[in-house]
Image (cartoon, rainbow, N blue to C red; front, side, top):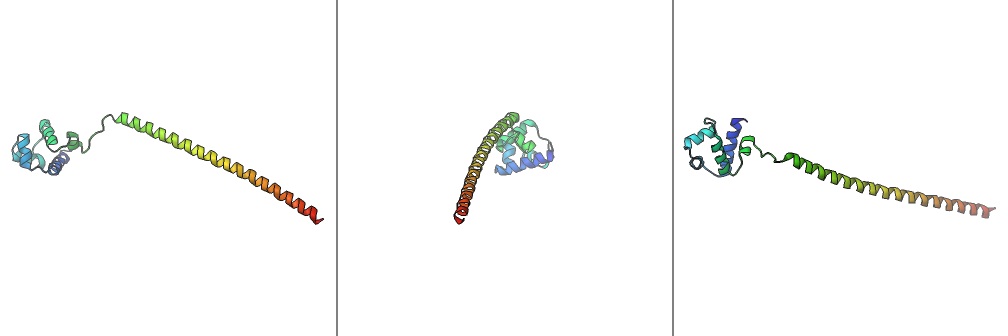
Length: 133
């Protein structure tokens, strides 16, 4: 935890919450100068004060300290994501295989049609040859 970054976040969330240094200092029970010391990095922050600052700025301690909110039950959510991914992948794979079979069936039918047309052409050529004799 980088204290300078934490103090920068505290200041940013205070400004975002449209609170003055005096207002937040009064609400957490310290002097304005002590609060200015927190934002400047001159005063150490105690957990109960950090919790109160988080509440007043409508954020969490995690966001103030870490800069983000950790995901609860990340392993469970990752498992859910894997399940959804696998279901979608199987569905897409089945769709692909079905379309591929349709194309193969169409190709086979067209080959039969070409063979039939070639046979008709040979028959016509034979008839023409017979008529020319």
